[in-house]
Length: 329
Image (cartoon, rainbow, N blue to C red):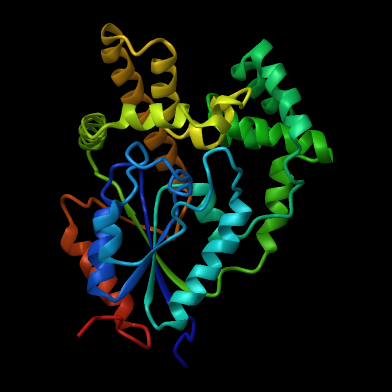
């Protein structure tokens, strides 16, 4: 039987604060790789500290792709990501280097690895209408409305995930079809022509992940996260936007909470509450990420704190099975 001729790629998946960035950097240097970010916050310029964007020193250690693609007021879709990521993978493979996909945005991974159906494009008028309805009824009521139209999507989308609730309702309003119908249509789409090793980094003890989230949020605050959000608030384009907190960039975990804290004057007596809200929102994000990852049935799960040897062994075996070992001399 002939060997599989497809080029190799590694996908490092996992919840926020699970150690994906550090491992991607280590393996990029060890296996002559380049890192492709799979993170919906890292595509935005100015979202650095709060998005845990690799700093200049980290980016100098290995080539990075799909970082700082848009201004925070500009849209960027999963379909655009899939095209950009595919282009990056092909360029990396052409250089005979190893693509390492690293991030926690499940929709981006799905778009790249499994394809997306050609859904209706975003319609600003419909989105504004849905936002007005949500302002009056609340997003819990909008989620209940989605559940009546599309129980499958409502079960998949959290009741507080305003962006995805809005998109599902928008698709139905524009096309008369549920977003679940559109997703099923994508099931027959051509798959990515790469052999991808999917590895999920997730501490077995949820308390360990929660502690890492709190430590990282405190480190972000110490590094000047609130000053970063103040700089975003000063941008004329965001000052002129009627609903800045509805922009995808500012829905990134931590940014909304920081923005609202500063809306209230940034008083010292409210700082502890802001910190608690930011950490709680990050923990909820991690919970949603883990729920999505459990649906990736061909992914292998590792506790990065307890089984780093297992991770290294899985990568070495996978890369050794290909035509090239991707190991630097």
